[in-house]
Amino acid sequence: MKSIKRIAVLLADDHTVVREGLRKLLEAECDIDVVGEASTGRQAVDMAKKLRPAVVVMDIAMPLLNGLEAARQIRQAVPEAKVLILSAHCDEAYVERVTALGVAGYLIKQTSAHFLSEAIRAVEKGNTFFSPAVASKLCHQSQKSLDRKGRLKTRAVRLSSREVEVLQLIAEGEANKQMASELGISIKTVEKHRDHLMQKLGIHDTAGLTRYAISAGIIESSVQLTIV
Figure 1: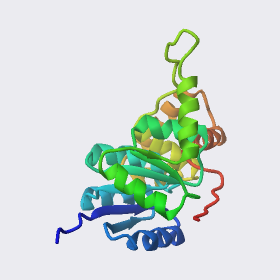
Figure 2 (figure 1 turned 90 degrees about the vertical axis):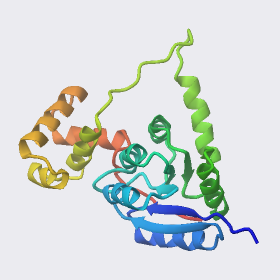
Figure 3 (figure 1 turned 30 degrees about the vertical axis):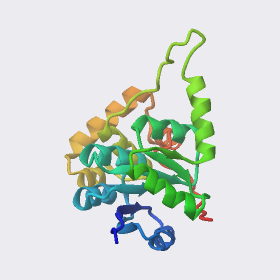
Figure 4 (figure 1 turned 180 degrees about the vertical axis):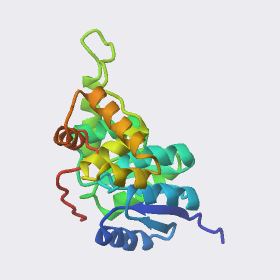
């Protein structure tokens, strides 16, 4: 009898109950192995480097390092791993950032277990998989990305990977000393990144940076988690 190829999956979500639910759903599938669970974005990156999973199922709202930046770093460090975003939200801001990263798929958490397993199988084969609501946003987004003459519209300010990390930690209320320790850099370097952020964004106070981080989908002011 021909053996079934099993797909190694890493789950990344900061809510234990969500990870446990996803694990139980996927363990019922004969061709999927959950090889690890991460509760922060930074842990997800480290585990992906160590475990080399075929698919990473990633939430967006993750502490220390948001899911989108973690996905970007995973795609750089482990290019063979396919990242599948599983989020409670599908606002256009999130969809735009996800597609810009080139992730393999995006499902909303209200999806069925069948869709999740099918999405994992699809992206592992090199295909893409999007929830219908997300696909609709993608269509609308592609229409908005061109001006009346068919030219690409100007994109928003681009931040470096480190600037995104610093911005998230600022929005999460961490002091410069904490950020320096968390990122393994000096306090002066943290201050330099903070200054660059303010210059790039035209924002000159912590409250404004926090509001920007929320509006850009780097952190969420509140998250409603539901799995059906």
